[in-house]
Image (cartoon, rainbow, N blue to C red; front, top):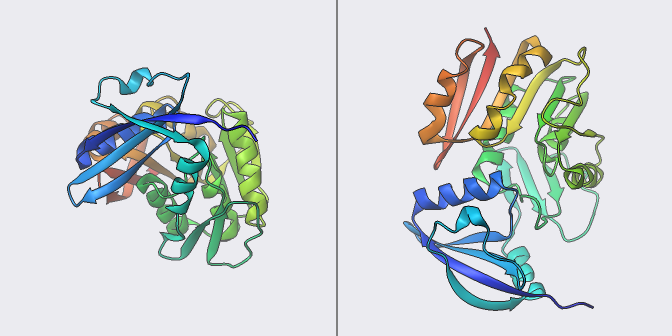
Length: 274
């Protein structure tokens, strides 16, 4: 067995700074970090890097300090052990797994956490899942843009959608989507796609959901109207509260807001076509 030694860097952050760092890491596809709550106003953020890696450029503006070295197996086990089953929505429990096991219980879902993907615990995923359950009708066609683990697509099928198309530019994400689908005993149409590029002109959906930061949403969100059914809804998550109003202003000629929800520093919205 190959033993990999990781260096870790530590930063103490308040809620606002923590959200800012999380947003940056998510936007860069960097998941070798996790945070521990010290008290109600302070978090310890740890970033893990292989011995040959440098601190990513997008994190160098922050006051990370070298904390020491740790074997990969040790810190990864510590991370996995910190993951417990939790309520993704009021109706659905998400169970972190170490290996693929079929989850057939209607009120539960499973996912294998990975260093290259999220765990489902982030507020933005919870908000997207909440709205997806709220607006999903039996037989609905669902599109998940920037699917990542595929947890939202799997949730859609589990809750009664007739089809879920999961799009992601990362081939590894598509494989992860298929793994998540197998675990949850559902079928997902997972496609490698630069935003909406893998869609055919005639493909239309009752629900389009995307959990991405604003900078990525801006790149394609107005184009979703071409694939949204007349009475369909667009669910957007991954938006920092401080950026929400200005982003919504850019969409007001195309969409109107049906509903919003907020969780800590993050906000999500359900939109309909004008």
